Image 1 (cartoon, rainbow, N blue to C red):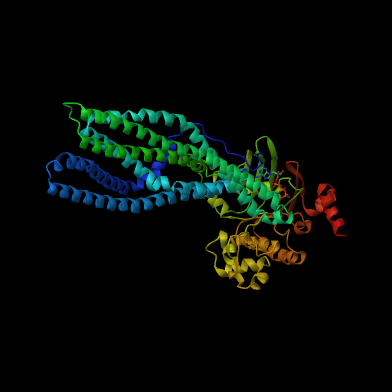
Image 2 (image 1 turned 135 degrees about the horizontal axis):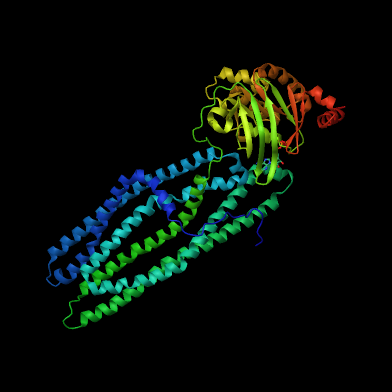
Length: 594
Ligand SMILES: Nc1ncnc2c1ncn2[C@@H]1O[C@H](COP(=O)(O)OP(=O)(O)OP(=O)(O)O)[C@@H](O)[C@H]1O
Ligand SMILES: [Mg+2]
């Protein structure tokens, strides 16, 4: 099968890293008490059940020859009582461990989500969102079985093994030695499949991630897909990825299915030896071996291999879980590149001076987007940024909010280097309206109030009125309480912009950033909006990016950005007089409109 470009795997760790399991301890630790209680109950119950074969031995070797019915009844009653105890303790384990497992999963999921919320834009720029989702949802869920049952089962199984070996030794030392000879055989099998099995599960988790990334992308892009009639091609790509996932999964479980039967075969071999040798010893004159001992011992063999079998299957699920844990911890360890510097101070109330001092920036190493950019915006000034597509306008305003760190130089607000103040105190004082305005699921009211939860309904309505959004909102079925879907699919592009505009204003920011805020709004509304804005922008420093130059003619300063720097700057009249790039841009729009 040819690999398609969506089938891009993440790199895999080579060695099995036990420290991943140690880190899991941090999540398990708060539940230590209840887990200890469960383990103790399980151990008591299995120690009790361990006595049952000794009862059989007694019946065979003592009570039957002595025709002692009383003894038989007593032992049968005890066996029944032990069975009841064991059922009760099993219920105790299932009940408590399900709760513990789910609580641990909740904590891990919550940690990843909190971390994802803090990760910088650059993290999201670099990877498909579906791959991020799969870590939070599927991988974390896959730990459920390991956490709910795996850990307790393993500890109880290990203790059980020790118990069983003790009981087997009590029963007969020679038979125990024969039985234990099966273990080296099992070790050979495990060594043989271990590495391959781990790799197979890692690959499976990669394929699952690729599939998920494609599903997420397809859902987001469904409109484009349908308008370009790409449904069939996309289904082919999906089927390729899904087939890849299926074969990776089948390769991985193949190894899981090897271990169980191997244990069964080794168990059968040792049992046969025990019968052959045991019966020989019974028949030998002066030997202490009895038929009762052999019967009791074979009952122990079943119990001896049972925990080994479950340990082996635990080992399988451990390998699967580790391949998921690696991905989960990798996300949690992802460095928060844009974070408060040590000793960062609160940004004092912003007056509004914004200065770029020799700022250079690149998204990818070696590919400069801004090269030594310098400008100063005085408090209350409106700065317009224009320039061709891809010139770096959005990049400049992203740096003012510190969505990315500069490579060199400084961004100063009121003389404070923004990399030395806390991000929270910086961003809460800024209003940013991004080029791709996002609407969240919820009401229009919630959407406008998104950045300022303390705002009253009246504040929200006032902001909406300022940006001329009030009229269309009032006309909607439930006005401000109309539910809009995620991404605002029920709204027109211009309506979405107006809502995000109101959202940016509501924070009452001292610095306002509007990236293509009015590109989808009709000219009439824009003129109205401009009037409201002029009032509102008084006393605030604003950065306005616009391709439609009519929007920015009145700005205090217009910067023409291109080739990584500011090519021209000045007022509209000055730039027109200069007859440079801005002039040509303006004339071309004018011609276009004429
Ligand atoms: N997240 C990113 N990762 C890598 N490169 C990026 C990223 N965002 C933008 N770029 C690159 O940086 C350059 C400047 O992008 P920017 O978004 O600042 O342009 P712009 O001037 O706002 O353009 P437009 O008018 O189309 O919005 C572009 O060449 C783009 O390819
Ligand atoms: Mg842009």
